[in-house]
Length: 321
Image (cartoon, rainbow, N blue to C red; front, side, top):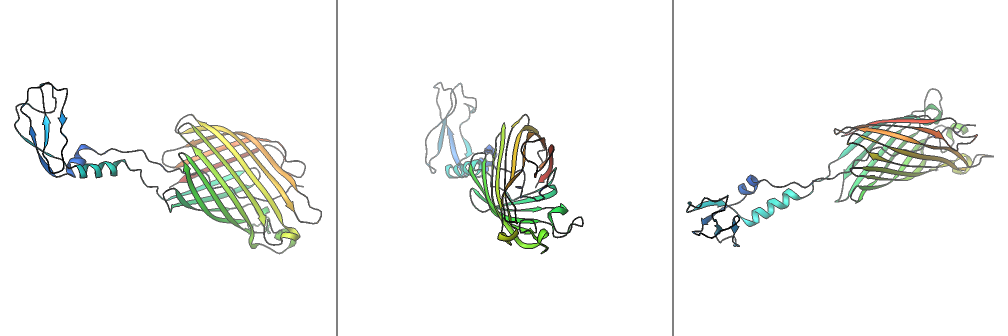
């Protein structure tokens, strides 16, 4: 007998915020400073360039120019150059400071051979130097996950919050907890009670790593019934891991492993079982403006007689803005 249910999928494609250092232009530095007199020294000594003597802010700066100097005309007797050490320091500090992370919102349309069609969203709002507030949701649309198949009433609906922690360069750890609403975990469809608010909870964590050449993701979530837990409650464990190589900035490919297990079944005569176990390759295309799509497909490796049968396939297409 095939088990119909769904589990939370992390909002795809975590955008990892970073910034490359920038450098202040000479014009910006000069414009920010006050004018101090600079005197060309009357010297005939050979130099390989221009030597700037150490000076305080109130001391004129002397440039010693020799016959090999390319920046100072030896015939010049005086010049005025805007220069202020405090202004220069401030300009350099501002120009080289990392850019602040911006708010981000990602919407992904997903479809696969087991869960059907399910849009997801994820909002990231900076609240600290290395922490974002994360808000996510999953809109399950498969009628079998509700009580009114095939009409689709009491559809399973998930909403959660958490944090995105920028633990190290290219590494983001996102612990979250979701609230599940509907009839799937609480057995509302089987017991005739209809959909329930607070059908269950799902503590989950997503770990993303991405650099110029490599990308990887781990997801683990436990879906625990809250309503009717000891009468018709179901608990599930859902986890996956994938990793791939970035051949270009637009194309990457790798492998995907995913497993879904029914870990607790309080229905009369019910027992725990493996729902599916998938393994296969993926290919992803991404654009610099935030659009991306990923196709994953492969083989069922352990669903069993009561679980999923046949090959698996899934497509995700999303946009981060």
